[in-house]
Image (cartoon, one colour):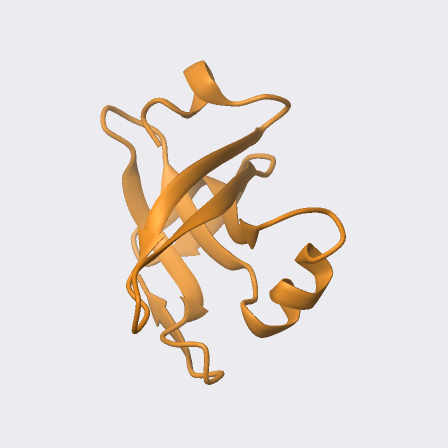
Length: 101
């Protein structure tokens, strides 16, 4: 995330990663930065920027893939380096969701 601004186009960044499936595969992931917001936390509100992450293949297949691999949302706090404030997303793709704060 620290190099997001240098590599993003229109608040979107696509990068390649290796996915640990039974057979390792290279997959494109898309990060989308959303507008800044405030998160209510004990001790006072925190200024954060939500970032969504989705797998991408191409515009025809993406809607099908995203039904099985939903968007994962990270909430980042500004600073050097950015700090993870909250993660809300699937623990696995069997539908079990978790929240880390």
